[in-house]
Amino acid sequence: MTWLRSASLGIVALLAGQVAAAAQTPADPAPVWPNQAVRIIVPFGAGSVTDGLARVLADKLGETWQQQVIVDNRPGIAGIASAAKTAPDGYTLVLNSNGHTVAGVFNKSLPFDPVKDFVGVTQVASIPLVFVTPATLPATTLQEFIALAKEKPGTLNFASAGLASTAYLAAEIFKQTAKIDIVHVPYKGAPDAMTGLIRGDSHLYLLAANLTVELKQTGKVRALAVATPARSAALPDVPTVAEAGLPDYKYDAWFGVMAPAGTPRAVLDKISRDIARALEVPEIRERLTRQGVGVVASTPDQFDTLIKADTERYGRILKEAGVGTN
Image (tube, rainbow, N blue to C red; front, side, top):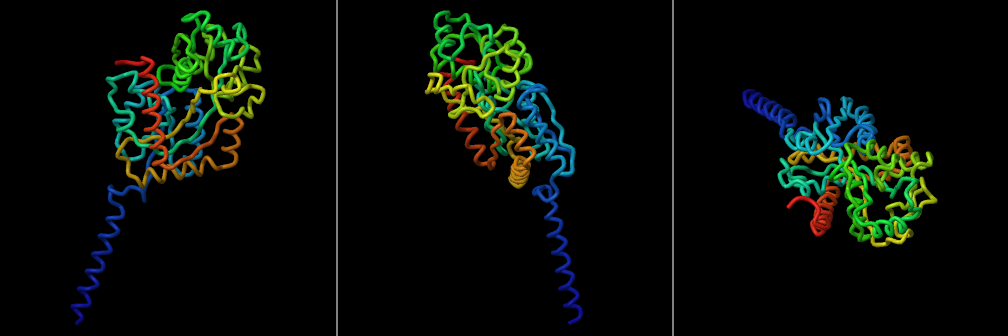
């Protein structure tokens, strides 16, 4: 019976070895993820709202994962396209705004599909946008701006950080809702757009609440309305869009993390949970709240649902307005 007992022990040892090997197979990278640097691609320049969010997260996630988390600024479509082509292993992420949902409306020859080639990880924030004009513009309220635009169609303009940026999308929806004709002036990035507004080169910009507070203090710009259902704590004296006389205007400027399609679900869940924990750290939450950022975390499924719903909604709105390529 000695030989039988030895054989049994050998089989047990062999099976144990196979189980251990299976636990480390590349098909299930979650137990060893991450074991190298993680890159967060931001399709906007340094100093943008998106860039700021990415850097806050990168610092905390680097501590959590004990790996370097690199913020890689690659403005424009090229940055997102590069992410779509990377291995779906969780080591390349994208932090983007809801402008991602309309990228296909403006460029039918995109080298990627904004929905099919990416999967949601988690929403990160919802940031109130403020209708801001130069202080020199003869319009002190949103209704006065609309009246001025109707009086001189095609002469007023609005700034953005480029097509498919959140400020662009917000302004286009404003144009439709208010039934006005104002011209789009794209800049290379948010800092340039703000400079154009201060100089008076552009007549309207939808700016994040925290940046509005800073510019408003200079006296060079005027805040007309906040694009939120309730007033912003950072700008309590500025009315909401509804209070300013445009109750049908609806827009939510969200920001979130995505990964290339095919990224293992276990990895997505881990990243989503770790980002949610980072956003719950009191100092981080307080820092973002002071900047007018609404902290929002979600599961991959919840974020995927939001991306798909907004892709359909905004795409329909812009196509009906004849915006974008055909």
